Image (cartoon, rainbow, N blue to C red; front, side, top):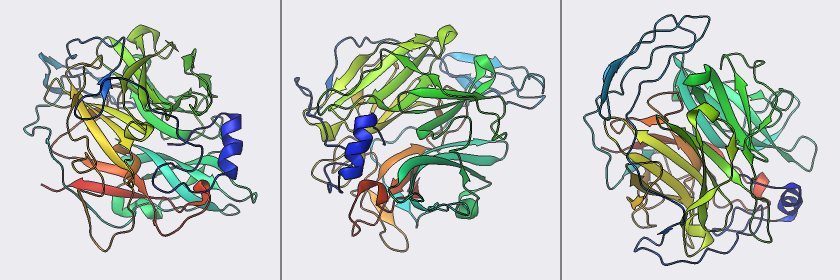
Length: 410
């Protein structure tokens, strides 16, 4: 949930921790006006309803077989595998899932699974903003770090992989400042089937890099512009931050925030991805804290349903609100969207081994696939998130954020 223009970076360095109502990097903007629902959010202008696309199975890069059979939406199909050289597999129908998406949530959490682990010669104060994808029998995580090696500190990024979460903290954290991408703050990673390439989405401004093989750390391209006409900072309203891409059968959608109590979206056809241009307001809240940052959107396996998450605060530690829709165009109906009944937050998380964080902050659900459809298995809900010791204050970048894992308590 990191974000700055050049001015924002200066302000962040000067700012201290703002407690529960700001992340301390810049003051939050004012909330947008509008008539709110009982959940405190209104649909924004320019959003139209539509039918959800049929689900598809993920392609399997780098394998000679990748077929999958199943049903997704109203479609049943069997995909054929692509060649190893092309790195793509078959696109089958989405899997049949026997679980419904819950309407209320209870999570269990252990101690942090990933802490700052700098390579020799570097010092990290925190690790945060994770994106996670399971591919080739291991989890791949890209995350933001606050590198204090130079003294003043600055936002950078790391990559690590591991076979399962108990091994995550022992994994080497590869420092990305020298990669062609440079730092990839607040990242998202996925495989885009039409291009047979991996995409890494990040800031600032909205940018992307591509790679034929996620295992090739030297294979990422230099940054390219993600969104033409991207909104910049206007007073207390920040520029665009925390970008999230999800595609249906026809279009790709780019969600983002500005810390102004609004959620934004841009849209482009599959054929024109990733050339996003322009944007609209998806929904508006009466205060900036109720629609803050770190939006995530997923396609729920075995259904025509999409799940939207947005990080929030309400004179409280951070928590996640949620909505559902049968289309990425909306409308979005509240699911678990309050401080007392959140998708994930202090009200519904039980820690094993002692509480180590009050915040359930910027993170990502563990997906059932790895492609642009952002599929989610409601039978296996796990959430990799950032948290911190609430007793430690100071400059936001130096707050001791670590990554924890929530597992749905069934």
